[in-house]
Image (cartoon, rainbow, N blue to C red; front, side, top):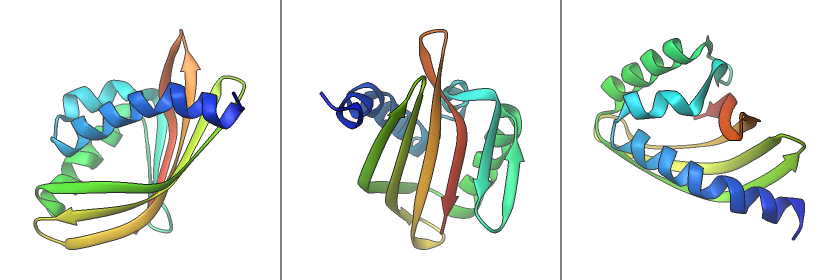
Length: 124
């Protein structure tokens, strides 16, 4: 198994559950996926530091977008030591903003046998 295949086999089930909870607006369940010192970067616009601030940012996005569904495509997984990097394209259909398309990259770090998001960046 290549490191890309291994990375996908490890992270995809975790990412799928994270995505489901995010789409269902279960932000209290989304928070623990992030390291306490995680960073969320809206490329060219804003950076947010820390798990609690990131959760507040998701609540604000939710107010702007309303209910939404997201489709992820062109996923690329890479593994380096205790890190897995996931890059992909996405399309989100929102209640209030129409369809948003962009790219994202997440860096997940293994800490205490659990993968958590350390760096999460996106564009649209």
